Every structure is written in C-alpha cells, then in structure tokens.
Length: 73
Image (cartoon, rainbow, N blue to C red; front, side, top):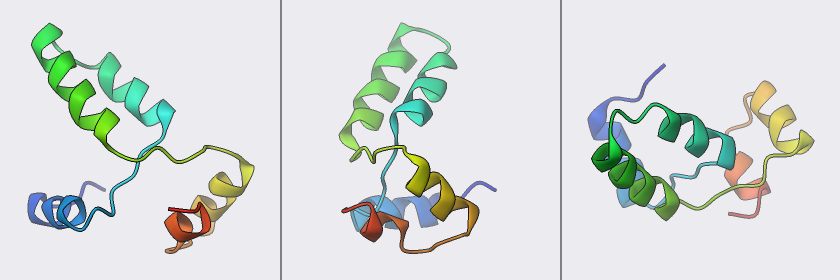
C-alpha cells in the first residue's frame, strides 16, 4: 500500500519518516539515470536510519504502530 501524497508530505513535515539501509539500496537500484540517482540519494540519506534487526522485524510482523519509539527515534 502506498501512502497518498498528502499523507507522505505530513509525515515528512512532522519529521516522522524513517528508513533503513536495505530500503534505500533497493530504491536507488531502480534509479533511471544519474540525475535521478543523485536526487533520490540526497532525499533518502536525509531520513533517519533505523537499525534493521530481529526486534524491528518482529514489530513489523505484529503491526506495532510505535516501532519508531521503540527503535529509539
């Protein structure tokens, strides 16, 4: 499910967006050219990076809405 553009903007404005390394790498792999790669890289590296470990995976599996808080963000 992809968030609506307005919802994504609200997340970014509230500074609630986070990512993890594998997500960044997968998105960058799909860049169509160097310009897109640079733009995506700049945007994605701006986001706080959460550690990807077993606890984070388990919280995602359980649909935990407070995973960022528990990840220390």
